[in-house]
Length: 104
Image (cartoon, rainbow, N blue to C red; front, side, top):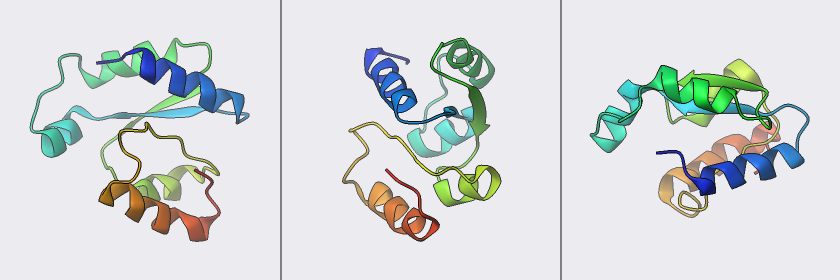
């Protein structure tokens, strides 16, 4: 569920970039990696995020592989919650994105 930590992350991200594109995990992705069906569906979650002043665009993402998303968007910075930093998936993401010049 969207909470103040998410809002603070998005506000902080917008302060550091010109265009903030937010990825919302697809329902099918959440089911695969959390083994849960989201309480609020992906379309509604995306609409909520889209209405935030700090957000310029929203994309529904069906993968956790940020390099796959980069292939589509060619972003130059990525922002992620502290709860992900330091885990194996995030460490691999840093390695994957470093050669592409992506700041984290």
